[in-house]
Image 1 (cartoon, rainbow over the protein chains, first blue to last red):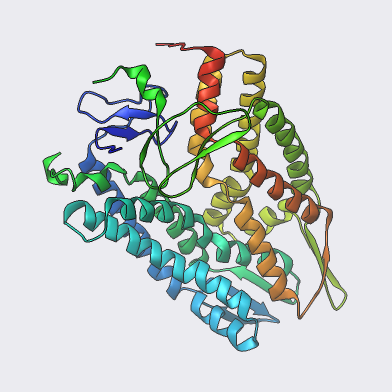
Image 2 (image 1 turned 135 degrees about the horizontal axis):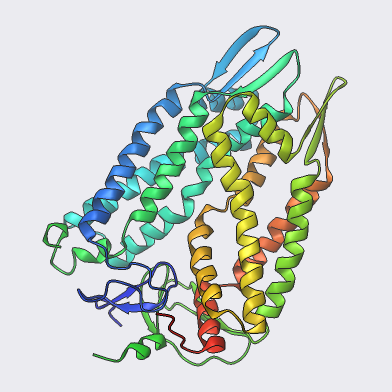
Length: 203
Length: 212
């Protein structure tokens, strides 16, 4: 069956008509038909915020070690390289996936979906829905590195040796927060929009 | 155009957004999406009772996980232990307020909120009272769901332990076991409860009450 005329409420998962007179979900009364244009712009704005935050997250140290008066900082990439050199490959791969691959993949997928909402692309409707589903579910996994830093800073907390989270950790945590918000504000109707012939400008 | 209540017989898959027409299921059977094989809905008569029991167990183990030592480490005689309260003390000491605030919400407030809201919701549905409150709780739960990160915190714990493995003696605390237990229960609960089924049961119990 085609679902061009139906829309799924993202809060209570019920089926609603997709037309101009329906503004609220018929069961939970949450807004389901805000302007597509607003949804598009909000997603884009939050995504840009996240991408900007990703720069200090990589440049500033995520972790600082204070050892008998001497400080040494390590950034995300530096930490991964250090772990790789030490030979703990599984941990290095987990951190690499969680803090480099997942955020970048998420940026690219959301950018792709935003482009696909305006211009014609090769992927089918089904593919785009699946891409959005992946984007939503991989989001929180990038928090791993921040949590690890916090746990280490609690455990290595002696008078001689101390580990504490750096500026990079704050930027990184905020970056994850904003990418999640960005994915949440993306309206799934933007996906079907192009196929229906009226693109974002028309709404 | 068909009538509004006819829409209740339809369901849209959460992954591929294919529209399906619902069929009546036997007890203890499940319906899957024909396109991507995701669970759509299920029929289970004692779902509420079973999940209520699981939620109570999960609350107890989460309480233990939050109040006892998660891991203790020993580096050449120097001892340190990780508890939730020591986490916040250290975060405040290092003046990492933004991370601390995010951490407080993601690890403490949202998981407790989700468990408490689920408990209250299932309890209200069991006794069949307070239709409006349980409706609000269902909406609240849908908003809270993506922000629960206890599972990711646990993976981070394992990564941190591997990092410390060479330099320290690590001793697992009571809360570590409780954490594993909470996670397993959490997975079973989320597998059991789908919002679609909850709403279906909700409208069955309370009827079509419109409070507006």
